Length: 283
Image (cartoon, rainbow, N blue to C red; front, side, top):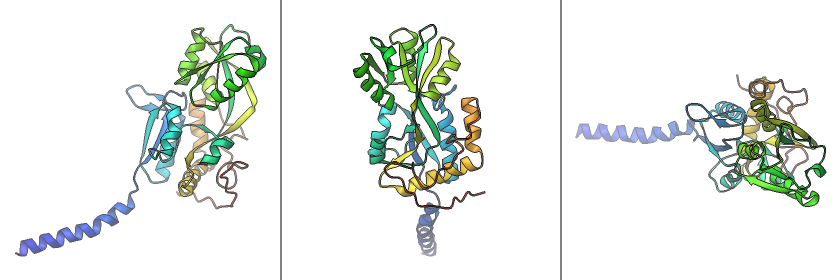
């Protein structure tokens, strides 16, 4: 009887204590990257994924006192995955456009991106879209590069080949199936640094845009937490350190890897919250 009574008290005490214990530990952040988008995320020798995005968002989660699970999938599945509740946010570099910002909330930008062509060594350089007439351009499926290439292809008379990954699009150029690939400047330059037969060609200066992390439209709290962590990493030089590690150069003085923009989100875009806030970076 006494034993039974103590057992009941012990169980009751555990039941009271367990919610308190659980409140301290939030569930892991769930996110995804395009695992073939070097140097942002790419297969690691021995398994797993490594790259700029992996370093950045592992550190973000650490500063938020959360664990993180990062899926490596095709980019085209990431936004639908977040909208369906599979992911809390998207860790892959995501270009902020007006259309996207109307449907998702973005953090402030953490990198500048611009569209850039890559061509095979020995090919005539591209000076304008008109130079692509009658040729083929390879792009990564579900990206703004696909959208722009298809629009310009109709105007200038070239075809667009769509591939599941950027390396597949690059391979199409190297094998002669396509004349050029259109992608992000960081990944085109990185691919050229790894393959002497591949050349980083014309960068489209007018396409400069923010790369930021999107969250569902109904979660401004998570947006603020993610951005605070990213901004603190800009402030203390952690972002610049990761930039140098993966892009082999220091960020420029006006680069979003070091510039902290006011408010939450991208100035001038839907969903931007200009309300000033004090940045509190923990020790």
